[in-house]
Length: 141
Image 1 (tube, rainbow, N blue to C red):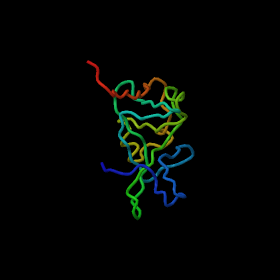
Image 2: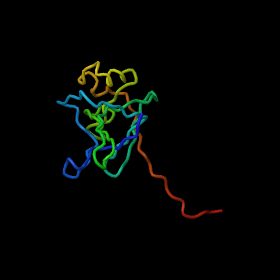
Image 3: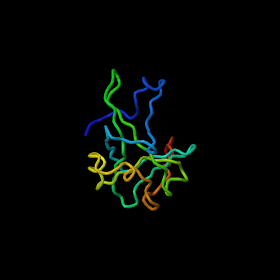
Image 4: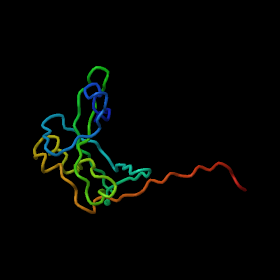
């Protein structure tokens, strides 16, 4: 396990660092990695939400890593798929979920991308709004 920067080197993309890459129509034969997660966050307008597994288990997000180049450190981008029915009302895509039992299939390329990078079925995630806590500015006795 290593620490890496999230996003591609902006030097090679007109100054923009891309944090995601779409799965559709792409192959990922090299530099596969995993990002462990217990939830992911969604921003929808002014509101923020968190999505987590109904069963409480952690999961991995499929990703690819890029080597350090110049002053840019080792980095990664998360691979995305169409959002599942639990998430679609908040956003159109989310990170491709790799289950714990699929870890070595993803890392060792023993299963085709098309079989692993799929939209999960309904009922996998719970979505909760992240409420900002009011700040108490004075005390009352």
